[in-house]
Each structure stands twice: as C-alpha cells, then as structure tokens.
Amino acid sequence: MLKEITVTVNGEKHTLEVEPRLLLVHMIREVLNLTGTHIGCDTSSCGACTILMDGKSIKSCTVLAVQANGKSLTTIEAVAVNGELSALQEGFKENHGLHCGFCTPGMIMRATELLANNPNPTEEEIRWGISGNLCRCTGYNNIVKAVIYAGAKMRGEELPSTEPQFV
Amino acid sequence: MIPQSFQYESPGTLEEAIKLLHQYGEEAKILSGGHSLIPMMKLRFATPEVLVDINNIPGLSHIVEENGKMKIGGLTRESELEHSAALAKIFPIFKDVTKLIADPQVRNRGTIGGNLAHGDAANDHPAVMLALNATVIATGAEGSREIPIDEFFFGFYSTALQFGEILTEIQIPIPPTGTGSAYHKLERKVGDYATAGVAVQITIGDDGIVKAAGIGLTNVNPTPLRAVRSEQALIGKPLTEHSIAEAALYASEDCSPSADLRGSEEYKRAMVAVLVKRMIHEAANRASNN
Image (cartoon, rainbow over all chains, first blue to last red; front, side, top):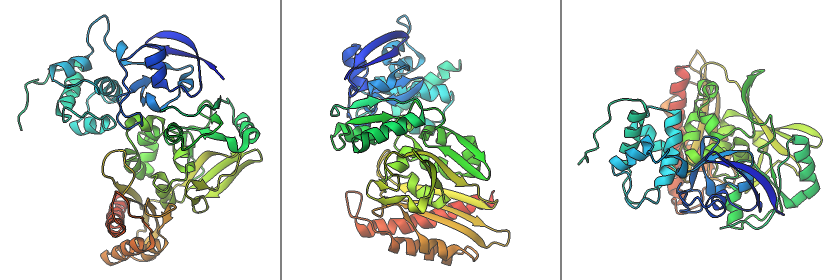
C-alpha cells in the first residue's frame, strides 16, 4: 500500500507516493535522482549515506522514506551555493581530504552538523565526531585537517597551513 | 537490502498506538529509533507485517527531575542523553555510555526506550539501568505500570513488556550526595558490541562507608546481569583495594560469557574483573568530587 509523504529536500518541497519499505537513501538516489548521497555498507556502519534531517546527521540507509514525512532534508548537492564551495568543501579540497571520494559526501554532511554544534572542536572531538564515517583511503589525518580548516574559516580566523605534515 | 513489505502506521497519540498494537497483535512491531529493527528487517531476520511508528507521538521525549527521580522519556534520543547538562551533573555515567553507543549519526536516531525494549544483553543501557536501579514504565490499554529493572530482562530479545505495551518512561532515583557513577566497555572499534562492559554506581557516606553500590554487566551473560555478590562485597564497609578486588573477582565468576570473535570465555572474565575494578575506582573518584 503506497503512502503519500511530503518532504522538503534541499529547500524544494516534494509530494511523493512511496512504498513503506522504501529506504530513505533509495528515495533520495532513485526517486529524486540525487546521487551525491552514496550507499556504502548498507548496514549503518560506514556513513557514506549520511544526510541531514531537520539539521541532524543521520544514516539514510537505516531510515524509511515514510519517516521523513514532514521533515526537511539536506544532501551534499545543496552544500555549495551558486557554485561557491562551502568552507568544508574548500577544506577537503585544499587539504587533500579525499582520495577516491566515495566517503566524502557523508563526511561533509556529518562534519556540517559537528561544526554547527561545536564551532571550535578539538582534534579529539573531530575524530569522535566522524567516528561513524569510514574512509578506506586517507587514514583520516587529512580529513581531520579539512574540518579544522573549515572551522577556522567559518569562525573568520586565520587559516591553518594546508602543507602536508610528515610524521 | 530491502525489508519485506509491511503496512506502516504512524499514530499521533499513545492511545491510538496501543489500539493499533492490540489490533494487529503479533504481526506488529514498534518502530522507535529503528537502528536495531530496520537492520534486522533489511536482513529479513525480522519480517513484521505492520510497523507502528511511535516517533510522532508527543510527550515521549524528555529528561526531567521530579519527586526525587530523573524521568527520561522512552523516545529520548541517545544524542539528547549525551548532551544533557541535567544528566551530566547527577549521572556522569550517561556521558560515558552514550559516547560508546554506536556512532553520532546512530545516536541521533537511537532511543533509550528502544535500547532497553530490544532486550539485547549486548546493548549498553541495560547494565547502566541495573547499576542505577531504574524503573521502567510500560503503558498499555489498562494504563501504566512500573517494572523494576531487575524484573525487566527475561532472555534473548525478551523482556517483561506485554503485548500492546509501550515503554514510555524510565525513572531513576536521584542518589544522595557522595554518589558517583561510571561505565566503560571494551570494544574492538567504534560501533562494536562490548567484549565486556561494566556499569557502576556507588554511594560513599561521610564516614567513608559504602552505603550503596550498583554494578551491571554488558554482553557477558545471556541477559544483562546484576553483579549481586560484587555489590555486597562493597556495601557496609570502607572501600579498600581488598573489597574492590573481591568485587572484581565475584563479577568475573558470576557472569557467563560465551566465546566469540571478541574473545574466549577466560579473556572476557578477565576483562570483566579489570573493568569492575576500574569503574569502581572511577565512580568512587567522582563520588568524592560530588
């Protein structure tokens, strides 16, 4: 039995008829054709499908589309405004915070909420903050640097060096 | 992975939800945070015909101190527990435990009521609730009833909740000053179930005598386990290395862990002993600063 739901996605209202078992990530990717949100593990472990629902980061592979009824969703597609990269996107670009890029949309959506709640996180808070997002390329150091960079940029402070650090 | 087809109901009131649960009986499952249920449905381990989503029922999400009790709504998210100043002040154990439950995104969805009602000894809140002597409030067609936490867990995925009942609130007695609490679990990686987990709450009087102790164990027994002999080893005397060692030994003897990828039975018993010791020290330390 189809259910009618109304969701606001990246500021645009959609009224859809969906099967109750349709997963939110499938609605986003296959119904709305927003394929920036990725499906990695499909078991709520990897965080590649992370989006914001009413400002909170969630794993959209483990939420039903019907549960998003009346909610406002933000996906990676809405992070850059008029082609202008967000502070986080710029941070990932400048600090080589990605190699293959598969985890990046989820990382950025998660870090968006992290910085909204805690504009000046410590390195440890960042590492715990992205502990639900797996990256199999970077070893995380450059991702952490990217978030530190974005935080500084959003606070209007001097930007940290983007030079690679050799340990 | 896609769940089997089901009918979705999203009642706006508790009465309506209970009515639906009665109407559909065994075919219905309650959807709270969904981060245990939906993965099980995707794997087709769970194939409910009806999902009763309680997320749109007002009044089930709160953290309030009232009449000497901390009252936590069943639908309160882990992330709300994690960041609650009211809880942090009286029950530092909530900061310990929530940080170790899954990951930030899962904590934005997962609820304390769901964590308990799932009846999984590998979940972390059951041991904490045992240590804090919580009472579970279940609401059904006949109204609400109180279930002491010691009578709540029955077996694997089985609790005292009856058909048509919803876990609406958890009530925790506010402890006297001189009380501290702590939780830790040994986990292989973020989001893993505990190799072993230990929750401790301890009250130490001005005379240095232990007045009360609660010790709960995670994932080392078929059901969440209260370490009764360990508690008794502490109560009524000053806290000493000797009494702490005794409590640690009893807990490691009284649990019943099974060997799995996380370790052998002996290893887990050894880790229970280590964690009991550490958590008693941590809780006592917090008690003296309170």
